[in-house]
Length: 115
Image 1 (cartoon, rainbow, N blue to C red):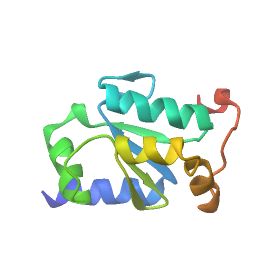
Image 2 (spheres, rainbow, N blue to C red):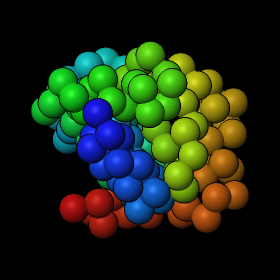
Image 3 (spheres, rainbow, N blue to C red):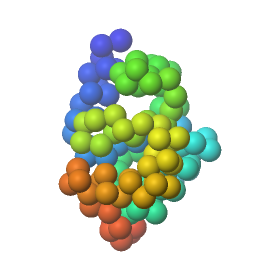
């Protein structure tokens, strides 16, 4: 299992913002992943989405990596932030935008830059 753990660790450390999710940012395949995508898109955060449905090893590996039982999982600057509930709560409390900015992640960029 170390191979997938090393891959996850590298992805988390080389992407400022990365979301491990079911589906893709353009086509989320679960409501919780979709909610986090909507919030990130609304804030204009540039992030990488990783579809855990492509591999059972990845889906299990990310849960072990974070010690967190559910997906989606959001990482910022190498740190685990949380899942859908935590992200939604931070967003509703107007804390999420500030959290990104404190971590040097710009928000409200043109959505077109996301490709």
